[in-house]
Each structure stands twice: as structure tokens, then as C-alpha cells.
Image (cartoon, rainbow, N blue to C red):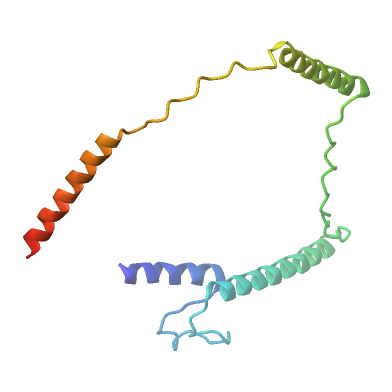
Length: 158
């Protein structure tokens, strides 16, 4: 599969740029200094762009010669200037629109503040939670059970 892929890559390079990366280049003319070297994509792109520019120049020269032979006046190539788009208009608001928004916001806040004033200022006190208190007898019972557990564990180790 790599062989097929390489051959299609070589065919594409040959067709587009006149470049190949095959080893059998001894039979082909070596008028290009990079012939026989493996080129990376940046070099291939640069070479392709340079060749395209040369072709455009040749076409322009030939077109001028053709026009001269046909008796037509020489046509200068049209240069298209990049036109920057018009700046976007920022959204604006009229003074009346802003005043309406301010008035509506003030009304909302007045309504919220009025609702707070009507509410009772003093909240009813919650009953305090009862604190859990253990009797002395319950504490003694738990302590005796813990001592018995530890005595059993220590006896098992001996």
C-alpha cells in the first residue's frame, strides 16, 4: 500500500511542480538543483508558488506580444486593491430609550425595597434545641463495657 501511495504522491508532484522523489532520476534531466532530494511540504509549496509566478509573468509577456501583433493597444494588467470593509456601526441607544430603562429599573428596586419594609423586622425566635445529656449511670455502663472489651483483647494476645 505504501508503494501505491508513494507512486501517487510522486505523480502528483511531477504533475504540479515537475518534482519527483523517485530513486530512478538518473534518466531524467537534472536541471533543478533539488532533483533527487526528498523535499518537505514547505519547500514544495515555495517552489510551486515560484513556478506559478513565473508562469504568470510568461503569460503576461505572451499576451502583450499577441496584442502587439494583432494591432490592439497594450493592455495593462488590472491590479485589484484589497478593499477593507466598512467599519461596523456600534449599537446605539437614544436618550429616551435609556431613560425608559432607568425608570423601569428604579421601579423594580422600589418595589423590592417596599416589600422588605412591610415584612416584620423581628423574626420569631426559634425554640432552642435540647442538648443531649447522658446520665451518670449510662456513662458508667458504657465505660464498663469498653473496659471489658479491652480486657478481652489483651487476654487474647497473651
